Amino acid sequence: MSCQQTRELIHGYIDGELDLVKSIEIEKHLSDCEPCTQTYKGMRRLQSMASDNALRFEPPASLEKRLRSALRRESKAEPKSLAPRWRWVLATASLFAAVITIWAITAILSRPSPDEVLAQEIVSSHVRSLMADHLTDVPSSDQHTVKPWFNGRLDFSPTVKDLSQQGFSLTGGRLDYIGNRPVAALVYQRRQHSINLFVWPSREAPATSEKASERQGYNLIRWSDGGMTYWAVSDLNLAELQQFVQLLREANKEAQTGSATRQT
Image (cartoon, rainbow, N blue to C red; front, side):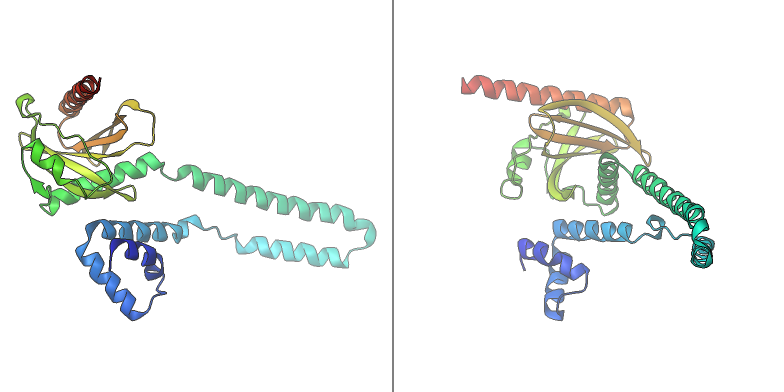
């Protein structure tokens, strides 16, 4: 089963709607395909979040009793007392609706932003690569070996720079899956610290400044440049990680300037 077929059937597999043969084929494919496995895990997380009881609201039993009691009294009341009593019922219903609205707004505002979810994915992928001893699919310090390796494996060509002379050695690259799409992961080394640099096409402006953050003891810096989004993550101290980002941006800028000069 191909990746395309798996992605077309993955929803039915998660919901238990496929027959046994198709389910076995998908399970076999997932055991051999990391990108599809990450897609499956992401959908399962979304399914788990949607079924979280914390997102559900159960009104107190006493509210139902009060409403039923009020309606019974109204049905027995004389016509002249109908209007005041109905006003009380409507006021109670309005209060209940207001409570529901406030709860819904609070739940929406308390949800993590897309950037926070993406940052957590970045950290999780970084930690997973260290724990599984799977930092690289193509171990090499030669940028001319690492860059061509991605040809045919991604729908874009990441820029690969060797910064070993500045103290940040290229050690290789690998495929990863972030934000529901395949991305390039370039791996650098600074003393005993590994740096994962995730790269994929940007949906933002041509260039944005660096934004630093911290998650679970790891420093992250994100930016976009040259039509690409970049996320750097490491347990390296923030000052040195910022130095790495600046060196990389300068190297990429020089490459873009040289390319533009050659074209003219």
